[in-house]
Image (cartoon, rainbow, N blue to C red; front, side, top):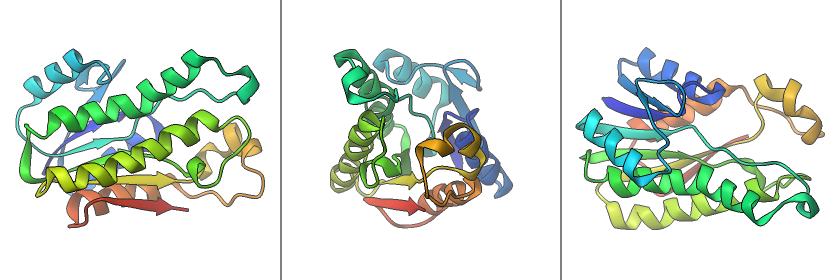
Length: 199
């Protein structure tokens, strides 16, 4: 398959790209500062340029999402809007425009996360946008069929515990490769409208 991967240089994106390439798929990477194509897909014009450059696709996968972590009393209205733009608007735009470029039975795989189910202090923006991504996936699945759409929702990664472990007391982390396997399941499988929990 030919897969467009957004956020390929991050920890999760690198694992997803490696897993897909290891299974023989052609991966075209997109990022704001690195990748085969440089673009901020939250900008509709830049997203359109990406799809015009990349051509026909079998799947689109997103492993990127920029969200601020602060206590609610320290959050500003712009912080919440930044979270929306960074993790919801960007992924919605991939689907909105991508349906015209992805194969009839192709797929979209978006990134959500655990915090809308298991919140942490400083995680209100992440909880908000994760819930929005999951809701969008369920709604989009009934509109874009036979194209498919799913979300991957991992807990904290083992590889990230040095940076974020203090925010997740008592939480058992998962290896990033487990989340990458969920992307493979979404892309190669037949399910749609699902949120694949990795926890």
